Length: 169
Image (cartoon, rainbow, N blue to C red; front, side, top):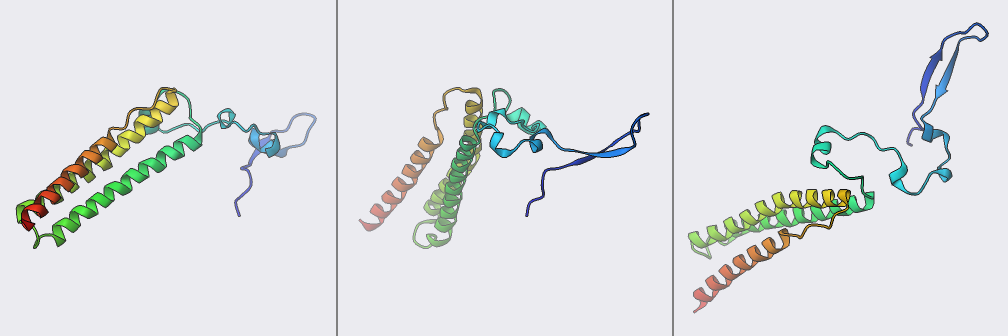
């Protein structure tokens, strides 16, 4: 069970006509019922951001949390794809060593590793650029990661096809 709203005990000093007392002071939102709170999250007070967040996400206003969370889910999807490419590179290096020449299987594995590296690193910058665009109300940037991934996959696939065709003829 979650604890209730934070409360602070404030000691009020004695005055000439009153006895000493302890008063429970609650934050302003704790006094209001939930039904009276506005539905728009932008009117609620926001906690201060840290230095790094302020540096990376400077300018603009806080976007709707749903959009920020959708941006984060997309970032995580790119990371999963990067990890799959990394696993593919390991698999090519481990299992195709006897099937392909050492130069070719290492080249394919290195291409997959390089794609994984670029995709993993690029996904952060994609997330950051979209987050900044949402905060500033500017158009979303074009995705350069998708063409990079498509081009890299095409190179790896073309290399494998050419190796298999050369081997079978």
